[in-house]
Amino acid sequence: MNLILLQPDEVDSAGLCCLNGSRAKHVREVLRAEPGKPLRVGLLNGPLGAGVVDRIATEQVVLRCAFETAPPPRPRVDLLLAMPRPKVMKRLWAQLAAFGVGRMVLLRADKVERYYFDSHVIDPDFYTKLLLEGLQQARCTHLPEVLIRPRFKPFVEDELDALFPNHFKLLADPSGTKRMSDFFPDAASSQRILLAIGPEGGWTPYELEQLAAHDFNLFGIGERILRSDTATIGLLSVLADRMAE
Image (cartoon, rainbow, N blue to C red):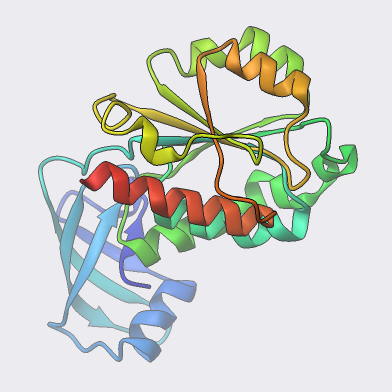
């Protein structure tokens, strides 16, 4: 935990915040904090700040916090991801938040089993905790917006353009002959980027055709067939590097 993430209503008008549960335990037992120790804090979907341990009790830790005037910029990358196997998605939640994704859509593609969408791993009560873990690891305050869409065609026809109206759209698939780098610096000049990653079996020709009709730019990542989590983290890493140039 590299950042103590606070809900806005946890901090009173004097800047005091009372931590309980796992966060208080982390401050006491992992950080071994004493009164007067400075800590990094942040408001969920708000600014970063500095906290100082005011006092420590058996079950509580009280912090005195001061926050910057403006929140950090929202992550510029959004993600359209064909729903992976539930155990893979469980591993991905925290990593996606840590990498910095503004909005993510979990979509059913033809090669995605229907029962994946019955899993508890896409229940907000389950994945929100994992997203928060990722934010605290990466020292980020922006909680990704998550949309679950179990039907491909209605989403693409009715929602895609409205949700991502001005994005530069990148579409990963083994059939792509170009590389992601071929679309830079044009993609980097766009205000926002939407990255679409298909299932391990790839998008179908119909799905590729429909996404291309909505201005997605197709690229490949080599001949090797990667697991969903490996491909997702690898592509986000490459994209972040390209955008930083």
